[in-house]
Image 1 (tube, rainbow, N blue to C red):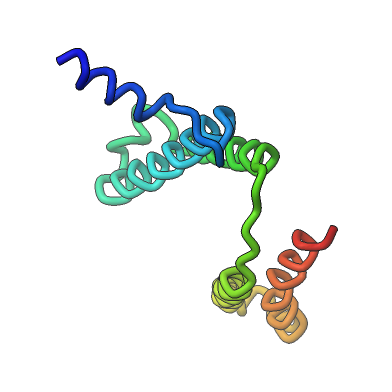
Image 2 (image 1 turned 90 degrees about the horizontal axis):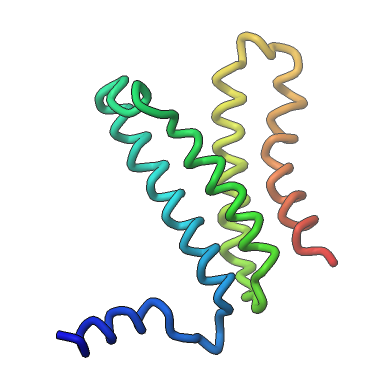
Length: 132
């Protein structure tokens, strides 16, 4: 029984050569808060008021954003995944175009200028993030 408990605890607290303790802790904060946000948001969308009557799910989103920024600052090793960056920029651009298109009645004359801009902005942000 004691050896089983020891193996269980060392699974979480062993030293990884690749990751520091702070990086592991912040990654856990980020993943836990992000998953909690989506689970509680989904529950609240299924039954309105089920979660929001008790607490705001946006606290999990705030923790996810802060821990994501913190995780980005403590990471030691970066992998360059250019194809994933291009794909995600394209997806965010299409989502932006869709959201902009939904407001086409309000934007009327500006729609011609905004649609290409909304499609290009994620690519520009991706290039700015990658530049040193």
